[in-house]
Length: 274
Image 1 (spheres, rainbow, N blue to C red):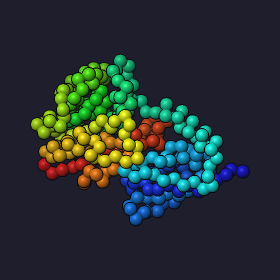
Image 2 (cartoon, one colour):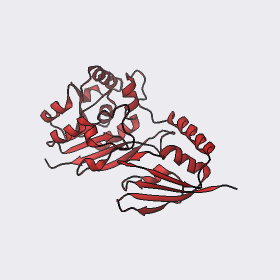
Image 3 (tube, rainbow, N blue to C red):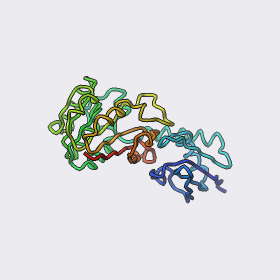
Image 4 (cartoon, rainbow, N blue to C red):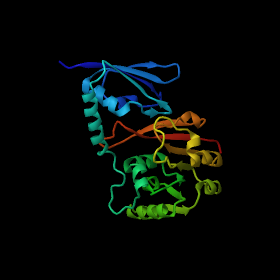
């Protein structure tokens, strides 16, 4: 006879697609006084262990998730679920699919998966885009492939060269103007419809809560880009959107077999009258 567990998880941001995050189950939803959500369901042992492995202690939208499972799981069940989660992690969304691209260890780790970069490009609808921290060019290439005209800025010369090379591999170098330098100094002098900022998160970024002040390029660019009508920022899942006034947040999930229930990043959208 299958053993079932009462699973309660809170607080989940109201803007989150929690059904995708949590997976199958007859979830009961309750709104918290803080504005977040509490979800509860009866799940079998494997489903409960999967959530324990994926979500225990994780931060989403600036708040640490709390997970309560009754009765408690056996350690062997949790250990098995964690091994399975590690296996799934290796089957995540593809960064670049074409051979011949150039990446260093950090850009490989934080590269926007190709499919998600293209989704962002299609969302931009052929706008004039500034990619303020282009790194190895993943997002700039996604925007260019979707028909946008892109200005890509990178302060690290080697990464800028890699981005130029990677754009050539994808056949979109003619749609991208590459600029070497500090985006916080360059962006105020440029015109565009959209400013996209994917600031360096840092190898050991806080997975429970991050704020605007902890991403200095973004905090400066928010202030120095008021002449640009739209600003999009790709930030960690743990980022607190409340630290960016008047922004809307959307969670982007992986598209690979191993990360389709994992939030890869949040996209903050800030629209301003110009």
